[in-house]
Length: 293
Picture (tube, rainbow, N blue to C red):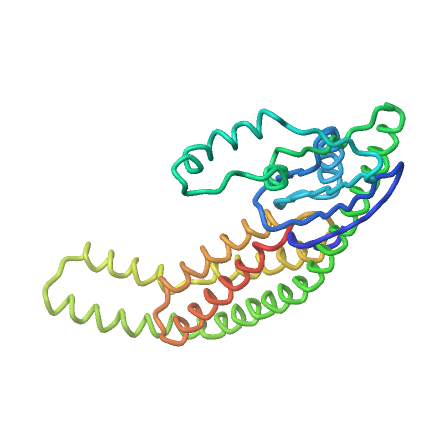
């Protein structure tokens, strides 16, 4: 599977045995795969179809699968919930008694939530099973459409990520070139520091410590070599198959670790500036990686 994003939308519609329905599947970024199902009463078993379908298609993201269904008027039974009506009447009675509200009308009471209920149920188990199977098929179609939308987002992300990896690679190359001048600069700085220390009559131990500290700062090849290796790994991940968001996120942390060390070891303004630009580009890369499945 090519690079995929985590945001998208898919929709499907269907009809069977006097029922019509629509399914909408949406997803946004998420560290893990989370699936929520919302459907009409009586069709709770379809939650399993939504979860299984999502788990077979996606590795990460927060998914919401919504099913809206309607039965033909002739097929539904209307039931008046008298208990709920009585509760409304009892709640409003004090306001009617002191004249702050008019006595309720029947049409107004029937319009209140929970008073007039439509029993959207099927008496025939075989028909119920057939309708649920058709709805499950529509859920699969909506999830397929969502997967296609996420792949389309992945194609757009791929171009952005490749551009940022190219930039990181170019900045790493610039850092290599600039770092070649660093040993001479540090050597000259060390010579001046040695003169200062000798003039102050500092002991040999202090001079050795100063020399070791400057020697460590002079060598940034290890950090730059690792950055080159990370660039190669990033290219492999963005061009590879299967979900790669978690690994890219980890790789971004490694990128930033080397860039931070490079800046801390820098003894040249130009190298520091390149390191800071490198960090900014890595941060842009990190933000885009958050959208990758």
